[in-house]
Structures are given as C-alpha cells and as structure tokens.
Image (cartoon, rainbow, N blue to C red; front, side):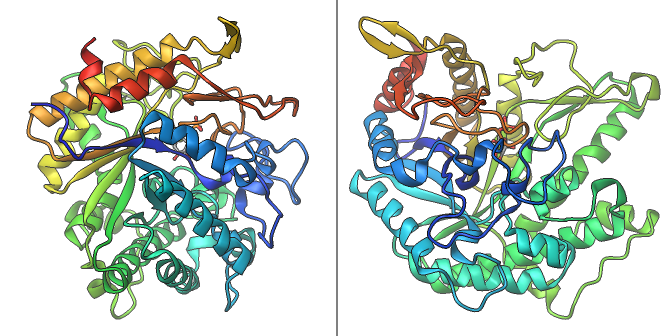
Length: 468
Ligand code: BG6
C-alpha cells in the first residue's frame, strides 16, 4: 500500500513571490510591494528598489520556460495564486483589468498544454494595497463584497480551466501577521483582539461564500481551505502542559473546524466570552458558514512545543509563528525545526478530525544553495533538500498506510522564489535554481538542481523511488 494511483504530485508558488512585473499591464500595488523586508522589517510608503518581489524571478515573462521545466519533472498539478491586484488593481473597482485576466488565461493554458492541472489560491498574502490603506483590510466588512466580486470574476473566467481552488492561503496566519495575511493596516501592537477576530469572521464568511458561489458556478470544482499547520506537542507530560497545548491548538483548529463543520466551535465561544470579544454576525452569516469545503489543504514545515511554565516559555523561530523549541529536533539554517514524523501526525490528526480528503500544498526546505559546474553543466548539489523531502514524503506514505485520504503533494517553491517572511532570495526552496541575488545581481537564468532529477524519478515511480 503506497501512494494512490491518481496522486497529485506537483509544486507550489505564489504570485507575489515569483511573478515580479509589479506595475505592468495595469496591475495595482499590493501589500507585498511595500514590504521589502517581509515581516522582519518596516513597511514603506511606496515600492522601493530593494524590494526583491518587484521583479521576483520574473515568472510573469518567463512562465512558459518554467512550466516546461515543471512538465519535464512530470508535475500533475501546479499550485499558484492569482494576484488580486492584477484583476482589480485597487480592489474596489466595478470592472476587472482585462490584461490581468489574460495573463492567467495564458498561464493556465500553458499548464494544460502539458496535462498539468492548476491549483489556484485566490488570496495569497497579496491584498490590493488600496484595500489595506482605505479599509484596514479584513477588519472592514466591506471586504466580503470586494472579495465576492473578485471570485465571481475569476470563477466565470477560469471555471473551465481550473478545477482546484483554495480560498485563502494559511487563513489562520492572520492571528500572527495581520498585515501580511489580512491586509490589516493597523500596526499589530495597536490592533485589538476584538478587531482581529472580527476580521477573522469576515474572512471565514467570505471563504464560505466563495465555496457556495464556486459550487453554483462550477459544479465540478473542488474548493478547499488552506491552513498553516504546525503540530504542537506538550513540552512535558504535565497535565498543565497538555491543557495549555490543547488550548493553543484550538486557536488554529478554529479555522479548519468552521470550514469543515460550518459553525463556530464551543471552545472559541468560550474564548470570546472570557476575553470580552463580541463577534458581530450579520443576518445570514450563520447560513453562509454552512457551505463547507470539499477538502482540507495545509502547509507543513515544522512542529513546536507548548508549556504552561512561564520559565520555559522561550520562543524559537518558525513559519510566521514560533513556538517553544523541541529538544529532540534539529533546525534548518533559518531556525525552523525539522520534524518529518510531524507530517504523518498532522495528516492523521486532520483525517481523524475532519474525514475530508487532505492536500499537502506546501512543504520544503529553505536553504542556501551553491551553483557549481558538474560535467560542464551548472547545477546545485542539494542533497540536504533531497534528504528533507524524502523523509517527509516517506511519512506521507506512512499516513496513507494509516488509511488517511491524501489527494496530493505540492512542495513549496518548486522553483526558487522570494521568501515570504524575510523577503530574501538566498532562502531557496526550488528544484530549479534561479540566478538572482539579494543585491539585485544575476541573469535570471534557470538551472536544474540535483533534486530536480530526484523529484522527477519520485513522480515517475509514484513514490517507489523514495525507497531507493
Ligand atoms: C508559507 C507561505 O507560510 O511558507 C509561503 O504560504 C512562504 O508564502 C512559505 O513562502 C515559506 O516561508 P518563507 O518565509 O521561507 O518564504
């Protein structure tokens, strides 16, 4: 018993981290255009030259070459996002930007040319900047209407080309990075819990509404939620640690629970009561939330620990939210603790909880790569990346043996791109090396890494090659 026959192997990117062309063909500014240092530095008023995302890896102009390389690896699926501000430059216009729409038509056609199914994230950390500045992003209920217009537009346009949709990337990350994730312009330390959770409510309603509309407009479509997963283990068997862990896990499960069950769970109502948070439900919201997803997708990079002991409450580094470091695990160069078994654990956890097909839509190792010449060809000997991916995929296989329904796996940054958290290009994830450096130098040429051939073999053998 191994990977299912129709397993969707592929790779994932996001528009803002690879496309570049930040102001071409009518595109408006998005939140990423003013965050040259990701979440680790201040945002700017205007786009600045040191912002690597303005050019990205120039995917906007080079996508044909890149899709061809994905096809050479045997991708069945390619996950990318639509940049909202290419379609609605400000976000609140009545009519869409035709040139933006055309770009994704061409991109999806190019994927289909090779039999690659697009998997599209509707909103991936790239809210139009105007919506952030004028409305304070998702804090404002008007965002539901703007998002609805946007999804109706893209569903109408791409309904025949795109079968798999994700409503919001890592929707739970808004709790940790309100600007990046929710386009909330108010500074994080000035944002009240009331406003933050009201924004969450608006996103949850918008997501359910998109699911409803999507099902009506595209009967064959599969629409999923997307969660930042980070298994959280109690630091010790002390019952206080176990309860504290349960409570912090609930904060993230809230998002999947609403998407799958269609209503607010009791533990969250308690949290709101005890913290004087009153979520404003408009008439009809409860009904909308009942439009539940077809599958649950998630990112997985690492796990963390939790403790009730204030003296042990240290915070390690991690994907948008750190946690108490696990003494049993090693970390990547960026301090993210590596835990392949955590992937089997989280697959089982979600399957037990939701009984919905699961899709791993992000997983990978951010590392510094060195371009070298081997047998007259430029390449990267990225055995460390192969080791990381192989160990994780073997745990996916274990979960399949456990009876978990896993639809597919798209590794993150299948081609090098700009990091979301630090906005660096030197944090590379790809099977394909892109010659571009953080000082702006580089030819933008593409080179196949050793992992390119490894992944190609894994896909061609439907996972058998993992046992070589
Ligand atoms: C996820 C995001 O949080 O992690 C991606 O969905 C991001 O956009 C990925 O790139 C890896 O994080 P980073 O910070 O290394 O780019």
